[in-house]
View 1 (cartoon, rainbow, N blue to C red):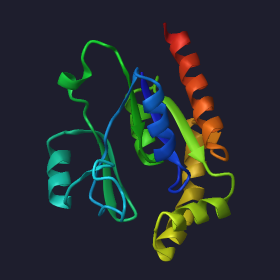
View 2: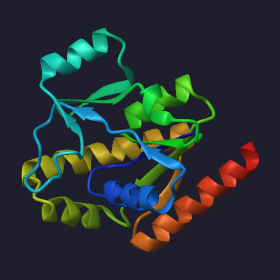
View 3: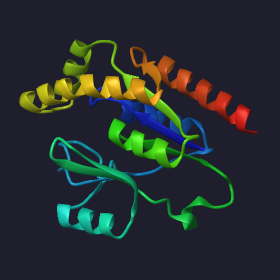
Length: 184
């Protein structure tokens, strides 16, 4: 199963995904590529950080499940490496933006789509500022979030409000478990 977790910047997607992966050995995280620079304090393995030329060459070679440009930077989900999957039939988790979610849904109609959001725009703004984002960049992300929310509705993504981290993780786990039961 492919599980897509999208949502605007600053809503806690990364934290939620880390907790999900840590709590369920049947989940495997796909590490996205990006051309954006690493944020101060951001883990070196948060993304596969590359220059634009390398990213575009990977596009030309058909190396992505999906890719998109967001606020001037490229982001993409690499094709899974079959040698890393093993025989354990793990579910692939993609932490991607709504543009990418649309591409995945077109290629894999049975993909399970979630849209994580903050309880309010002001809370999202505070989270972005707290992680060190530039105030001008924060404003762009806030404006883009409105479009992302509308797009997620059009895709039929399941909305998860991250106002309590443990509750949000528990909600996602329950929904993933329910989807597994339906497919077995």
